[in-house]
Image (cartoon, rainbow, N blue to C red; front, side, top):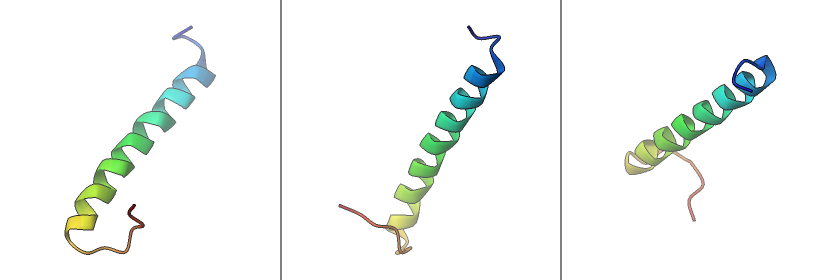
Length: 37
């Protein structure tokens, strides 16, 4: 399953998405225009 390139691609995309959410949280503290609940 881990040898499936599509699975690796999806896993990478998910990891990058999580990193983006972490960055957005940091940007919110500095007043960057990200939508917040």
